[in-house]
Length: 344
Image (spheres, rainbow, N blue to C red):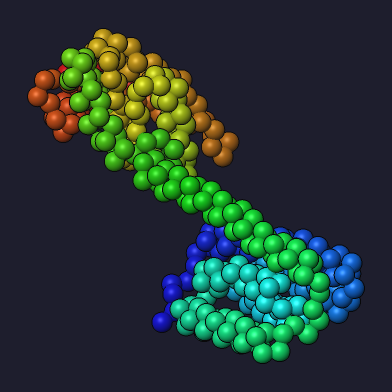
């Protein structure tokens, strides 16, 4: 059974991973060229030069986004190279270590059937090489000191490359976790916190303020006649207005406050350690800033005022109760002509 196809983002991460391996492999084979030239093994020099040409082709395929073909070409180069190097210099040359680096690439890009086939082929190749070496020995042996040097060089390469690539993947995983957290807690349009995050922030702030016998205020902001703006100027204009209003509101609040897009054209603000009178100052600053806002969309000046409702936490309040009172205050602001602040 085949796996679910990789996303474009996942393919990009894997392509970067393969690109790193190819770069390191090219550097390693460059060292091999110098080593085998120094020990007088011209055939192995030409083999490694051929590998460098294959790596250039793999890099070209990666630029074309042909990830699976690039990985296939990479292991088609790797298996014969390992087999040839081991047969020429012996099992103790350590060339078989290079096969370890291909396993995760095939596992990440291939189907289950392909992974199973490659793993079986790999084990059969290793078994055949070891049996041949026990029976006939290396075809072109080199001095023991050079063989030990080559073995440790290949082992060091394996450890170093795996360490570097593991660090790369760890960084990618951390980036993915941050992206998922942002998607879970942020409004994609305005970049403000979303409703889910606001509810969690209220629970934490409520517990803290009750322990400290402090104050906690909540206000709701609704953009006036926003639906009419959408109908008249289009949803792109409406989205632009929401983004700019969110920016203005964010500039008016404190770092410890929690500002969120509650839904549609409505915003919510949590003000810990603030009294009702202090919160009224913040609310008025938000309202006035929004009133002065001018958004230019397709050459047209757009304006949008805001009505605000504010409430202070009572001893036994739940979030729903605070929001209900803030909505009542907001309704009072609407009935008073909009573009004003009221509290309950």
